[in-house]
Image 1 (tube, rainbow, N blue to C red):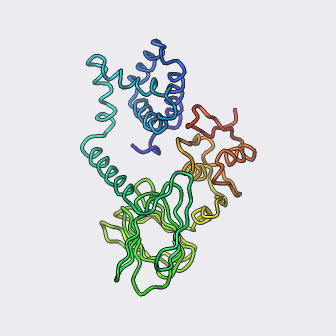
Image 2 (image 1 turned 180 degrees about the horizontal axis):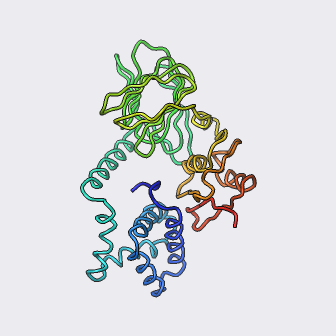
Image 3 (image 1 turned 180 degrees about the vertical axis):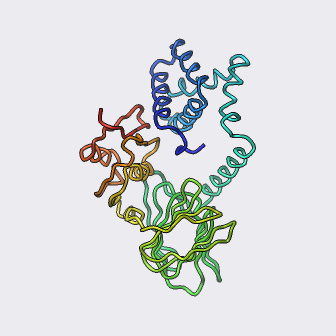
Length: 322
């Protein structure tokens, strides 16, 4: 299940449980209370599983996290009813055959990303000049394969986002994502691979986009953007400035909703960054630094009726002012 499908309030509760257990690993009453919380609702189990997945990335740096992350494993080795309850994380919550196939697809994509010849780490933005003169910027946490030969030029975006300024060349250039392909026509554009969709934003020239499975095509001109999966396109809309401004180390918000800005900032720091639904639709304008997300969050807290809540070092949420 994607993070977008999880309830913000329940995620916050799961993070709170994790923080309490990390602070009191030997508290049997607390462990039993967590078990009861997990039993009562499938959403609780999904949220806890998500918090565990995030925490695993920080386990080498935070040994005390082992106590909390092992709770679910210990519960799994309890009596039959407990094991049945926890199997709901995989079965009752819908991760059956289709979920397994989706996981397998994600695993393959992760493997391809690890084999790509261009990478950036979380928080890193990098510029590359390709052999044909094309300029390529990789956003935070991105992976791209560059494959040029005597007749073709191809870029494979496996993860993250790229901004491309094409160079004149007799060989056609194509950008491939999991959802389709893009053929630029003398242009400057960005491509974002995100949550099962490809987002194309064109800033100069035009790009021909094609869905991988349906074969549907759309031509996108400068100043416009479109999102698509392997079957269909969304309606075209104005290209957002932040889809290009990141190469300069800033996010430009122009009447942007807080939900979108926080989602962008989250790309530049490890862990989880969320926003409460009560304030997610607040509109903002301004320029926010990407390489100091804590400063960006404090700027939000000074200009909007929000507060920054840190339940764990790697778990940050933008909440309404009490």
